Image: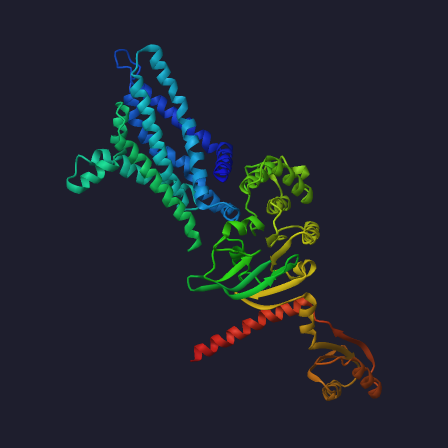
Length: 239
Length: 321
C-alpha cells in the first residue's frame, strides 16, 4: 500500500508538471461550458436539471480520459524508468494501482469545477438534488471504467499518442456507439450491445436511477482492464 | 554473494546469454567485460530481477532472483545503462520517491538522502529539476539512487559511459571507495575502465564466458608467448636465418628500414640476451632491443577475435556440409 501511494504521488506530481494536464482540464471545462449554453439548460422555462449537458459528457470523456492516462505507463517504457521501477521492491500490481489512482484523482479534480453549474441551478431554481447526486456518481463510475481502460491502452505501447488512440477509439466504438447500434441489431448481438452501452447506463444515473446492475458493470469492467494492464506489464518477463 | 549458474537467455532464436556461470564473493569488485552486444546488459538485468532467465539460476545473498525477487531487490542497488530518471522531478523529490519505494520512513529517508548526496557530490543540485542537469550529474543521481537503501550488492551497467575524462576519473575512485562497503559488479566494453577499478574480470563474448581471473592472471596467460623487437644493421637474409636458428623461436619476420633490419620474433622465452650475443658475434650494430609485454588489451582483443575466428570456422564447416 505504501508503494502504491508513493507511485501515485509521483505520478500526480508529473501530471501537474506537464502542460497536457492543464490543456485537458481547460479543454474539458470549455466544452462543458459550451454544452451548458448550447443545450440552453439555464433558459427560462427549462427544468432545473443538467440532464441535457450530462447526456453529452460521456462522449467528451471517451476522448479526454484516455488523454489523462495515456502517459502513465507508456512514458515509463519510453524513458526506460520501468527498469529502475521493476528492479526496486515494487510489484506490477502496485505500479498499475498507483498509476490508476493518480489518473482517477486527476479525473476527479477535472470534474470538480463543473459542480459550479449545480450551485448555479440551486441559486436560480429548484433542482432535483437526488438526480444531480446520482449523475455525479455515474460520472465518477464512468471515470473509474474509462481510466482503467486508458491505463490498459497505455500499458500496450511506449508511444503516448498511440496509447491515446488505442484508448479512445474502442471506447467510442463500443461504449458510446452501442447506444445507437443497440436498436438496429437483433438477437445475441443486441444483448451484448445492451450490456456495454455506457451512454445508456449513464442515462439511468442521470435520471436518478442507481442500479446494482449499473454499479457492478462499471466496477467489474474497471477491474478487468486493470487486471489486463497488470498482465501486460508483467508480460515483459516472458516476451 | 552472487552466484550465477548455467545462465541462458534466448530472445526467440537469438541466444543473448549462453550457459554462463560465475561467482562473486562478498566485498569483491568484479568487472564484466565484453564488446557491445556480448550479453552484459542481459545478464545484469537477470541478476537484478528485471527479467527472468530462460534457464539456469541466480542467487544473491542466498535469495533466488526468481522465487524471492522482492528480497533480492531489497539488497541490490542497480544503475541501468541508460540511467533512466524523471526529468520533471527535482533531485530531492526523486530520491524521496525512491526511498519510499524502498520502504524507508521519513527519518530514514532524510538520513539516507543526506548520505548519498554527500557521497555523490550532489549538494549543489539537490533542488534542481533532473531535466536541467548535465549527463555527469544525472549519472551521479542514478548512482545516488542505487546507493540509497545501502544495498549489499551494487550492479552498475556501464557507469562511466558518456562522461568526460575528469568525471570518469572521479566516478572510478568513487566506485573503488564504494567497494569497501558493497560488493560491486560493473560492466564495460572499455578495458582500461575495468582494469583500473576491478579486482577480477569476467570477459564474455557472444553470450559466452571466455575468460575470468585477476588482471595479472589474464596478463600472464598472454605473456607466455611474447613478442621481441630488434633492429640490427647487416644483411637482412643473414639476420633472419641466424635468428631463426635460436632455440625457442616460433616465428621471425624481418623488414628493411633505412638500412637497418627490423626483426620481430615470437618466442616462448626471453631471447634478448641471445640476440645481444648474436649481434656481438657477427659484428652487427644493434640500435633497438625490446620485449613487448602483452597488455590486457591484447588479451581482450585476442580472446574476442579468437572466438570470432572459431565461430567463423565452424560456420564455414557447417556451410560446406
